[in-house]
Image 1 (cartoon, rainbow over the protein chains, first blue to last red):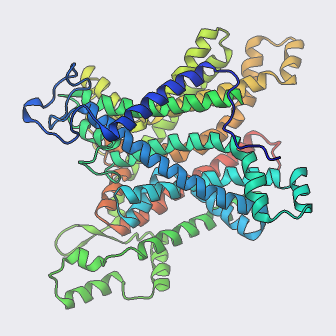
Image 2: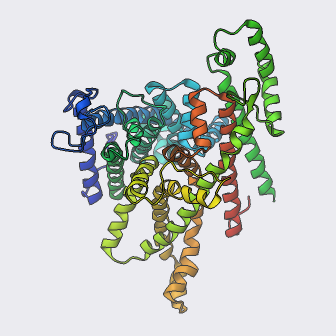
Image 3: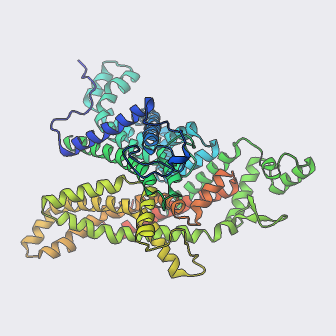
Length: 273
Length: 319
């Protein structure tokens, strides 16, 4: 009987895990609700309401166009989480495929791919994404593709080393002797056993993707205004730091919130093993 | 020495691959450079003349070889966007020349800050016996690692620039005019780059020290009568620093990347801002050179760390 694939089991809820879970759930809730409903329209401008400090009407205040910052943070968080999820899904998927093949079969192809991933890994990730963007042009779609390319090598590395560890395990030998096909060995016998390791790297990757996405949008090569993204809100807000410091605080803290929640969550999972 | 030779060959190979990749990447970009410089209204003769001038009529391999040859000779080509005046094109060398020191100093100060702050912090943390202290440091470093450097830069600008008025945001002083003033202005940007890395390094050092404290040699040192202080600094810290050095080498790339973003926050005229403006104006000769340059810096630092590691710990086999 094959064991069912399960996420790492939490035996005991530790503080890290609890705190991380609460923060992540709040963030996800805000982002999901933001997809369907926000307190105010995210692009509703109002000259009379420019730069209102945080109040009951506008918990995070309003920006230079009189737009409600809370609504825009909710939308922006959705954008950032959506993009990061796609990036991690894309690079994680590619990482599994390439890592499994190179790790299991080895050989010259493995050697060549490892050299390339080594080179990419050593390179500042945001810089590489900038290069890819400069070749393909900016915008949301290209941002996702370029970040996915940039993050793939780190997944390849982890998956590959796990496949190397398991490819000579007794139960794989046995499966091979029984005449199980290669694809089946790769994806049904080995893959489920690397998920606990893979899961941790997915969470780290997700955090890095959030930081990279907001960084790119901050630099003006990612999500472009008027679409709200936490990064481009920050870059707008920076110009009004003197008059409206709360404008910068809200999107910035939103990024910190998501990243911190996720890293506490993964720390909690790691500690429980 | 055989090891050193091998490393140098790898270094050159990597640079070669990156240069080919950079060259090829910018060949396949859609859009004609000549039209983008001259506009659509230029006469075909003028277009042809410029094409010849830029060497765009040659086959790709020949262009690559001549490009690399020129770069090695110190001629980095000309920018498509910036020009000195109507008739003269702007050499990339001049464009990059006075921006390089800004980024390099920024990264250097950040590295110094990381080392100066992270080592005492990590040692203090590893030694702290109280549970509350341990928990506080844990939460503090987790939070510091979650803050992106550009948001940290904005917080620093607000706190130290607007509330406490310790420095004037946007009041950048060129290093040619006033070097101490320049370093002073770079302190806060460097701090923004450094804080998350300080947290990471302190965490790493602490874990490494806790592992080392369980080692047999620590018990031996105590039993032969070494003082606490001597065991800590003479034995444990020295051994615990080994992985930390590797770690510092590994995050150099991130420090450089962090500097590029933070330049944008503080309005520093470094190569990061040049890179981003060149990317948005599609000034490819400049982008190519900057990529090569940054790659070179990063690879070279890895190389140095590798050598340093072997010098400090001769036990590592020179294979």
